[in-house]
Length: 350
Image (tube, rainbow, N blue to C red; front, side, top):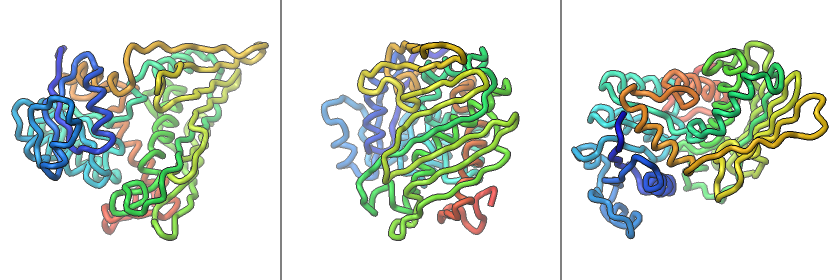
C-alpha cells in the first residue's frame, strides 16, 4: 500500500482551501501544486503555505511530474472535462461532487479512468467516515428491524447572488446538484444495505421544486423515492432555505437518528447516533470516534486504495457514482430542469 501521495488541486476557491487543509491534516498527503485560471489567483492561494508549483493554468498542474493525484474543485460544469483530462495525463482523480452534470457525462469520466488505468472517486467525504460504517453495521445487525422509511435533508440559506455558482444556471447552480446529491446518495446506500448490497437504485422518483423566476434553477426541492423491499425515502435540499440537515431511519423495531450525517464532527462537535429500540425506555446514544477530520479521512482513503483504482463501498465506487447521477437526472426530469450540458437529450428518466 502506498504510504504517501503528492496532490495537486485544480481551482483556488473555498473547497480547494478546505481540501488543502485536509491534506495537511491527513496521514499520507502532501500538497505540491495548485492551479488556477490566473497566476495572480494561484499566487494568492493560502499565501502562508509552501506550495512548490503555483500554476496559472490547470494544464500546468496536470503536466507536473511531481503530482500523482488531483483534487478537482472547479464549478460543476467543469468537473467532467478536467476529470477526463486528468485521467488522460495519468493522474489519479478525486472529483468534487457531483461527478458530472448528468449520467452521460459521468459515463465518459468513468470510461476515461478505466482507459487510463487511474484511480477515480467522487468526493462524498461522509462516505469515508467511520460514522457511515457504523450506521451500516447497525442496519445489518437489525438494530431497528427491517428498514421502512428514510428521511434525509441537506439545505442551507446562501446569499441571493445570481452570479454565484449556487444560483447561476451556467455554473450548474441549484440545490439538487449541489446538495441534493447527498440525500440521494445516502438513501441509495441505506436501501442497498437493507438488502445486503452496496447500494440500491430507486424504482420510482417523484419530485417538485421551486424554480427561481430569476435564477432559473431549483432553489429548493423535495423528492419521494421508492426502493425494492418496500423502502420509501423522503428527501429535501436547497440553497435558499435553511432546514434541519439530518437523516432519520425508521424500521419495524425502532428508529435511528443521525444528527450530523454530512460533515460529522465539524467544528469539534461530538459525533453521535441516537438509537431508539422498540420497547426501550430510553434512547441509546452511540458515540463515534475519529482521529482526524472527514476531509482528511477522505484524502487518506484515496491513498489507501490507489492500487485498486477505486475505493470500496461505502466510499463512492464507479458504479455507485453512475447510479447516483442517474437518480439526480430523474429528480431533475421530474421538475423539468435542463442544463445546457444535457444537450438535445433530456435527463435520463424524463
